[in-house]
Image (cartoon, rainbow, N blue to C red; front, side):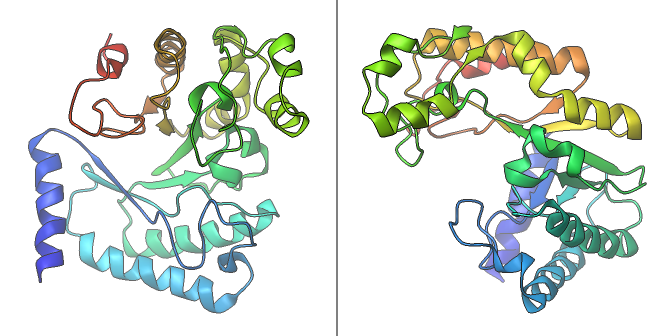
Length: 273
């Protein structure tokens, strides 16, 4: 069908460009990383069975592609109140995929939006083809400055990186509710803080011998360019120092190497410096 043509074309494009592909389930009826209610994936056995069946279908469709080219990420940004719920769900999915495809790399992310701060609670299988992933948007007030869908959307004042993200004087001038929200997403941030924030995944990587991959990081287009550029230079240097693979969010769009009209944003030169 036409859908099969599109899927093959997308993978063919990636191969032609020398790119590797991570295939994930990003948004499900039973799980969405921004939903306010508890995802049914963690509470209803029927939904978990459906999730596993989706991966059987995906495996059947894509298993002919080389493991050197295509990897599977079981779920984007799991959000479970109890980390054991994600360990249970990811464990079942991991075993199912490994039984079907012994040579496929399977990407395992941490709970609470693939946070680096939840790695201590993550159950990691004893498997040489497991790739550990996390997402990094710290400090959120820098990376999502003016992003309409976020709690920090209302802040339009000065921003600093590296250093104190928002000054006490600027915080004091805010509406009380916004001030309390901003305090959660600000602080003193620099390259040393970036490394400290990655302590858990770095340690788990050393303990298991499994590689790390930052599957998302980036800065919203409304962030001041000088702040953006300092942040990118630091985070790329941290990834390089610690041998962490990475993928910028995103290629074309509001965090992109290109804007929505296809114009260069300056991010590509920062990534490839």
